[in-house]
Image 1 (cartoon, rainbow, N blue to C red):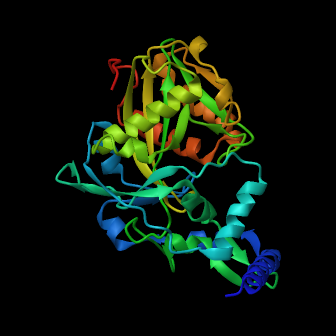
Image 2: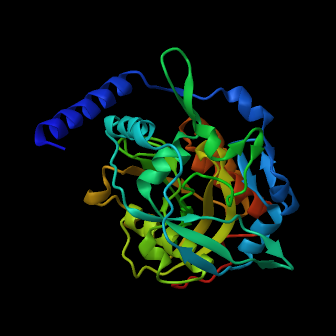
Length: 353
């Protein structure tokens, strides 16, 4: 093609993109559809329940009990698979919304979970992980409760389609969302302070809301160091905790995996919830300069009476309900379930994992 024609063709594509961008609108999905969702039969057979009492959660009580007792699974790491939808202009429009929000965005190499956890004979079955990118999650999981439409209301991409088929919530192996692995932990210091963090205003997720002591997602670099799912989850939880609380990497700690769940508010995204005992005082906790755009400050929930730990935590979360992120609300659910089952954060020996 002659140079002049190629130039005109490029300008025409750009003009078409700009015009198309002006005709595409993002809007919240109809929340009434969510009330009709049911679990796929495969998830029901594997013991999963759909809990709508707080943040909509998908989890298995028996699997979570096994995780609290140290259950582990091996995993296979697969290569990247791009999300089949959205692509082209719809994907560009969704990403542009995130850019215009002013959030800190880095398209890092991540890992996603391809299989829901299954328990057979008391053993968590092997799972597959897949290499992914951070932006894959922005255009799928983080858009799952929105629709992209034209000004006349015609929907050209329904966000929930990445994890719901009709009214059926899909197992991970059928979901077309990125499903990057999220990990968070609540940390208790040596002087019995539960650390609560507040996200900075430029955080891409949960901006300015209260979140667990440490939270983030699994990087590809984390997944190549081990084939143990528990080691991967604990490693990510502790890395995020130490970074966001300004603590040295050699601080003694012990982390328990409390639960695995999928967050429907984020397109069924898989999330692991942990609890960490720290051999450090609350006075040592601070926000490093390089983290200030993402972590605004920390709050201290001081435990005056260990016997009243469960009630004290519940009261704290009730009083701050409007400021809680979905991930912290979910964490509160699983911490309370663990405490109700007899688990206690005060009986574990501190050690480096």
